[in-house]
Amino acid sequence: MRGGYFEDIRSYHHQWLFNKKIQIYIIIFAFIFAVIALWFVPEKIPIHFNALQHVDISITKYMGVFIFPTLMTFSYLIRQLHRQTYFLFYSPSTVNWAGNIKIVNKVFYMTLLTI
Figure 1 (cartoon, rainbow, N blue to C red):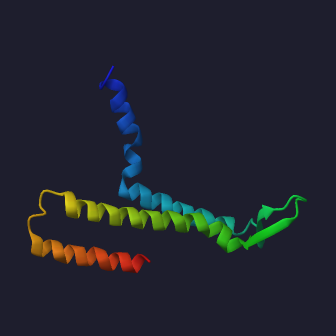
Figure 2 (figure 1 turned 90 degrees about the vertical axis):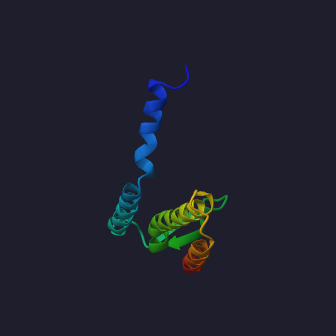
Figure 3 (figure 1 turned 45 degrees about the vertical axis):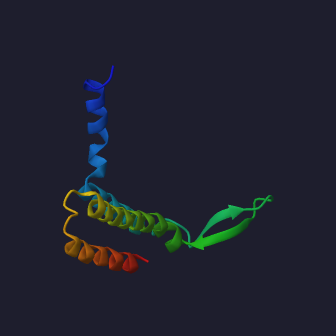
């Protein structure tokens, strides 16, 4: 059966995840959790073991704890940039070429700032 009750539930079930405020709250919570976790992790976190189960590679606790919240923030910023460029080129109001050139320059400079 296509449509109907089950597709409405499925679309509503994941709809909250694409809300900008919810995404920002999740990122803030990840950073708060990382700051709290700093008190409980050792100074060196092993990330690779050899065949004899000796530690080959270890990282500092700051790198280990903050890498995922940082990646979450970076991916959120890239997603926002993607949304801006998508609506720039695919929205029906792309007839105003002079305004679009200003927006393209803005997106270009935002891209340079995120690098």
